[in-house]
Amino acid sequence: MSKIQVSTNINNESVEYLCEPHDTMLNVLRNQLDLTGSKESCGSGDCGSCSIILDGELVCSCLMLAAEAEGSKLETIEGMSEGGKLHALQQKFLEKAALQCGICTPGFLMASKALLDHNPTPTETEVRFWLAGNLCRCTGYDKIVKAVLEVADDMKESA
Image (cartoon, rainbow, N blue to C red; front, side, top):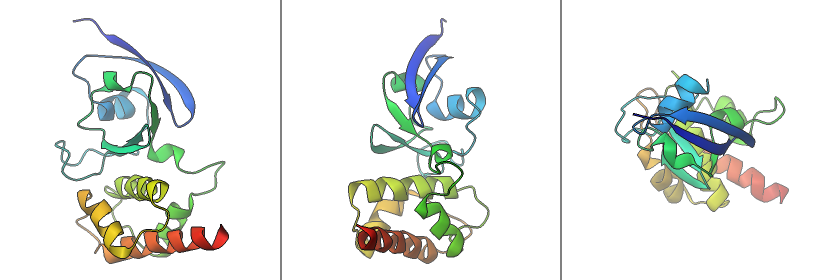
């Protein structure tokens, strides 16, 4: 079987790679591009640990074929910070102890970013609904929800 050449943009950088027709985006990110922040936890799109943003929409990279990224813009957890400075969500997750083992954290951060990109002033119910596709076995969800709401408040005050 011949490989597929894909040209895409990942974290604001032009990227080209070759993939098999059945390769998932998660496998290409982790095994070919050394972007190991996205985690495989379930492999079936149920946990959110592999979440990335594709053309502005949150997707599970374990369910996406790598060939589907042709011409698209992807954001991964590695592109969330800028110039060595943590994104406001990353900083708030640290401050609020909204993480523990770290397997789910990249997915929660990407989902939270996607939410705030779409809705900069979510209610608590909206945050909980948006993050419902992400599973965590270590923390309660309250600290994560509070961190997202505080970042939204901070963004509102600075606007």
